[in-house]
Image (cartoon, rainbow, N blue to C red):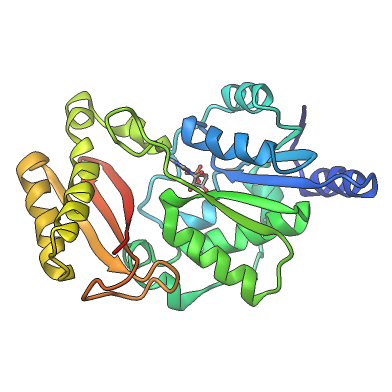
Length: 282
Ligand code: AMP
């Protein structure tokens, strides 16, 4: 497995593979890999002849008061995991290799980025789109694999790919969870033991909403209250950032659930902000 640190090295390696007729899969990550990432990597491994995993804590998707500096990092461990799961190359550039000091070009999908995480993280998706487009341009993959945990991100990237005629197929993989239901996330290491014991309440709240919908309650506002009540009772030290019912593709708000709807939540607890979601089908 190769460790590549510069865009030029990545481009040249991928160009060589394509010249040999090899198909390429890409899995973009911010590293500190966990089993959720590995489910993407394992899927991608089966989808192409060559597999590139990127490990890049992309500074442009972090706001000024966010956790860029303390975001967990462990490149040696990530390299070992990527290699064990069949990656052919890991791309792990320094920020200075990805962004010129006068970087000035941004990709935005404002309509899909204004709600949910975009409401409290106004520059986040602009940074995500820009870095993912850069990675897609460098690798020119046949397939790029993302997680449905970041559902809004995937919807935005799909819209970007459609609007800009990108060639790669974007694949979304199901949320990979701990045994108690907590969605895996690199940020889970920020949780104290006490918080960690209680946060499965988020997943339980999502499932409670699904059950209540199945029992006939279709009013999104009422279902949102049920989620918040469950959270207040089981994770009283938390504060929901948003509890939103949206169209899964357009991310526009849904008031009455009459077709497939995404319930997406972000919950703040201590220093951590956790996101999760569930697709509600009727
Ligand atoms: P990150 O390193 O957090 O930027 O995530 C890199 C990719 O892994 C993104 O496409 C995420 O949606 C995906 N991912 C992160 N956590 C999970 C999870 N628990 N299950 C499935 N995919 C995930």
